[in-house]
Length: 270
Image (cartoon, rainbow, N blue to C red; front, side, top):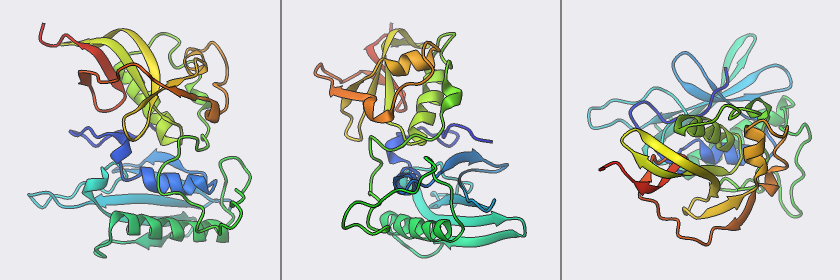
């Protein structure tokens, strides 16, 4: 079952802080097809391979003050990251691909080693590619050197066809969180919705879509995105056309859900 990537219960974190962003970015930069999925106990990243097997990527968090460790999941912020684990699920059972538990690695070191291990199996077993074509490294780059450290704005999108018409009957903050979270998790830009106001009932009034980068800067976006989600056009155009010029007006908003919704006016105290 595929589903949008959401924060763990009881916590809200910006997706730019999520530990899963880095390995997803590096794998997708290689053209590797990655799916965000869920199991009975945790969310994970699934990397389907051409031979029918699947690499399942999960992670663990550091113990809190009570010694409690979150369920194995990719839903955790970078600051809480403890280790990565990847297993190859196949007809005969499972094979350990990578496990850094107890190795005391930095997040960057851990992620680099994880991605290298997954890419090795991906090459050996004939992995699937998001665009069905293996990527071509830039001149002077080896396969290992080409992966970036951060999620690029213009990374390729996985199949998001099911989002067509999702806002046909309107949308609210929960819809924005689910749909924009899915788009970002699948490699698209981090989209936000700026509402007129927020009151005790939530966000409301007119709204407008923007893209936001890791530094909090806002950018105009193509109206094709709204038309596609509203069911007015079948596709939103290539992802490298989505993000336009930086927003010149002030972009400090008094209310935010720290996810994908902002409000220009705070009415919560009225």
